[in-house]
Length: 434
Length: 72
Image (tube, rainbow over all chains, first blue to last red; front, side):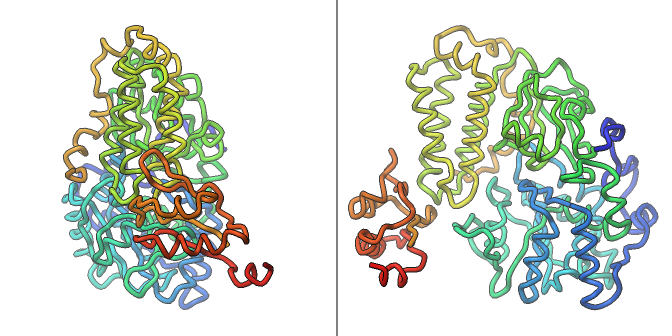
């Protein structure tokens, strides 16, 4: 890992002057140069393109962190699959897709072109949430400049209901096919998704932007920065107790403490929520950990969608987590009993602990309920909530003990609703309407 | 043969836990939890009956049924 580079902002995807003018195709080509669908024509060319992506070590930036080349290789086995570009930004604390599509739409479209070529895709569908109509406008405007150039110029832009689980890949495939847009139970995740009679593969918008750069500059260039296990740069959305919340681009493997420092800390952080609302709390003393899959997994965390929410001192982690758990309970698609009934029960228990009204046995019941819900949904939504709650009980164990024994909460004096600043309250309005 | 529940299809009727309590239990909300995924030979018939009895067709049986039947 090149630590010298990790302390600086990177600017592969986010141009320093991105906001100084419209992201025209002309400006895009001036900055990045022409896109050659390298490798040459025909099947051999596509093989070489895929080999380059594989050698780059690029991993998906949507949350699961799966190797992009492996996903492509298995989708290629299908006959003319559909390519679905996920720019839904289902994660309330993330703003990276919005920034990327708003300021660098041509890079996302370039990546979609490359992947569609590698796959021999039958169609490309670009999915954005109805809560962000400006993203659809940005993509359509960019497409108009690309008429006759590549497949992405003719791709469909679909505006879909932006609920939390709507961006889950089986839910997205369902929505694109005209279905209800809720996750499907897939006991074997290696079985391909489908849209109508065609296989489908979902890639996150940021992942495709990186593909566009790998196609231009090659795998060696891509690997020049970042952690060896998940090279390159990544977009990170920082919110919570910082002075300049927003999206930064950093090399993977940069210490979490340094990444949040880019958003200027208002006070020493007590903890940081990593990955997303279904993510993991890291205690203040663990923030030196590199933002890379292996090192984070040792602390039970993952990069997720590149989300860091900073919890400043003087606030109560249990109160904040209870808010997020309540929100997440409301985001269940309502298909699976353990999620539909279990998440509100978990949120109730945590809220009772936060309010100081919980009997000591509520904590035991909460832990049992976490175990009862984990792994029992059609999708991973309940698992994310369990991960969040378990890590809160661990990292804020001293607060839990105080609350349960009736000591005053140190967060009482602090303004609550830190999570509201990271987009949660806005998302409440976009919930499932229940 | 393996037994599993499609959680999206299941509505918590609970017949499965009545019919094969050796393999299934109900959680506090009345939804089935598979306590043992591998179905032993002597429970194959009961498991099949439970799958047929599910009003939501949410109880899934998969695996090399024929081989296990022969081995019995």
